[in-house]
Image (cartoon, rainbow, N blue to C red; front, side, top):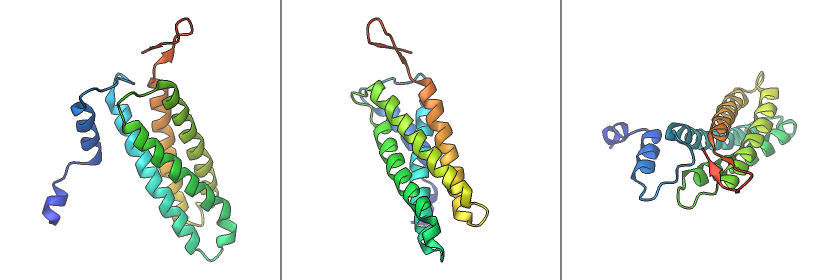
Length: 158
C-alpha cells in the first residue's frame, strides 16, 4: 500500500489533469498554472491554519492566543471554500471569483499578521504565517490574471 501511495501524482498534477479533462472548461485565466497553484495554496493554508488553531489550543497560555485561534479558524474556512470554488469550472462567474479571491486575501493577511506576532514563541504560528503568505501571493497572482470587465458592455476580456 505504501508503495502505491508514494507513486501517486502530486495534488497539482491531479488538479491540472482535472482541468484539462473537464468537458466544458471555463478559461478564467490564460495559464492554468496560476489557478492550480492557487487551489493548492488555498487547501494547504486551510489545513495549516486548522492545525495551528489546534496547536494554539494546546498551549498553556491559550487565552493570549484567542484572537490567533479565531483568525486561524476563519482563514481555514475561507481558504477551504476558495479552493473548492476555484476548482469548479462549470458556469464560473468572474466577478464572484474576484470577490472570493479578495476575501481569501483578506483572511490570509489577517491570520498571517496575527500568527507573525506569535512566531517568535510558537513555531506552529511561524509555519502558519508562511502558509498564509504563500496563499496570499497565489490569490493575488490569480486575481491579477483574471479578466477585467468591459465597462461599455459588461462582458469580460482577458
